[in-house]
Length: 344
Picture 1 (tube, one colour):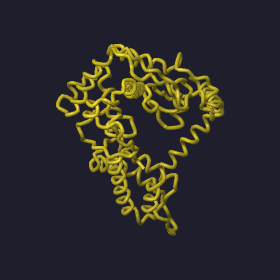
Picture 2 (cartoon, one colour):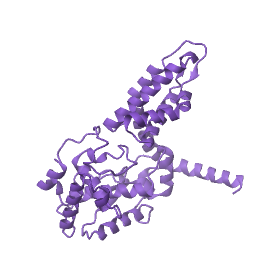
Picture 3 (cartoon, helix red, strand yellow):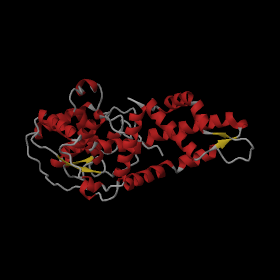
Picture 4 (cartoon, helix red, strand yellow):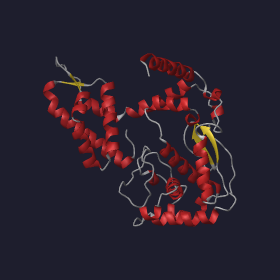
């Protein structure tokens, strides 16, 4: 491809991006039918049909993954319904679910939908296996990363592979997702794990209800795409504000403690310390926090990003002490993430 053609494509996307960002989401006429999202919906339906379910959850486009409270309807992020929006989502948030992760999320939400459709949480056996459905739902929780009482499912989830520990409802949804996935080989994979009891329970329970009609057929939805009247620019602006707020707090405060203001005539950019010692820092985080390398890298990238944004600097004579302090800070943040499931 010639340089002029590349330039034309770039300019074309710049025009499309500008036009999209200034349109209201409700005016985009987005639908699952005929969109890229449809193939995932159809695949999930085939997987449920393979398991001989009569019940078929319904779907709608909204701002994020999820089922409305105790409602067997699956909310699908609107950006999956248009390839241009998928590209925009990746640009705005720096990441995008790959097809494998999208299907894992669909199966997870299907677990919620089936739980709500048949009111499984009301069963005494369900409570015995998973716990009380009415247990307080907390955004911050302290997972045990080595526990074998729970399945390990979505790698790309913000909570890593410990999301099943968040709440009994999530525990069931994650267990169901592993059970439903074709070729998951859960009987062998979890053969010597206590969580096998949960998987066998789900297997028995699904065989019992799969040919039954649902007890709950509510169709309440929350923020359907037709009512998302803000522009894409506003939508991503609000998401960016939330991200920026989450990136501040004690992370910025701790970084400022490591790199306090100095009156030295020569000051060096602090972000270079993270870049030069990246391999050592990754090794320290993985060794002391039990996080994997992908999670450790995410922590370092965040620290680098905030250090650069804050334009933090240090005197050359403080290099060694600052290196030791950023290593301690990185490990401390990693330990906090390992216990709370949150990175600042």
